[in-house]
Image (cartoon, rainbow, N blue to C red; front, top):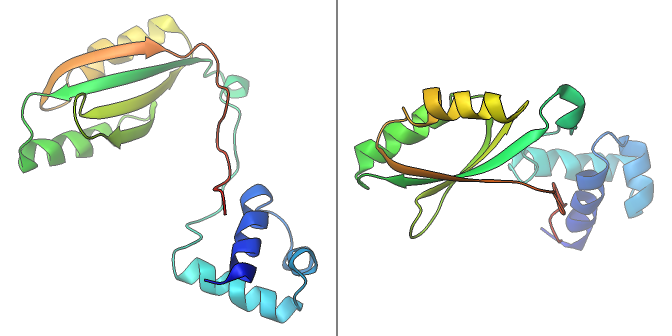
Length: 150
């Protein structure tokens, strides 16, 4: 990956719907050369995909919580079972495995506190291998979906 590829990535991170013609103009390449580089970045997996950024509040998901998960054991089968199960919970919009304690951090979006409590009681506490859950509420998002610093 060279400096031109990084320029292409920097532009498409912020403007994924930009036409190849406009992108080529921005990075000062011919359309065919830009298109070839863009396709190579997609095929190599550097560009993992394109998607719309939807405002959670606009679709009724105004309650955000961070849930810390401590596992009962750290065996492979337990970890795999937990990760498979948590990936099926739609309101968990991000799940990260951590070093140390706790073992996981889950970002959860629901419409309100009662919906979160129901999700917590009925689904999160039932995830396999969970020893302890601890949660905190998000007061305000200061930085979100920032482009990678290329």
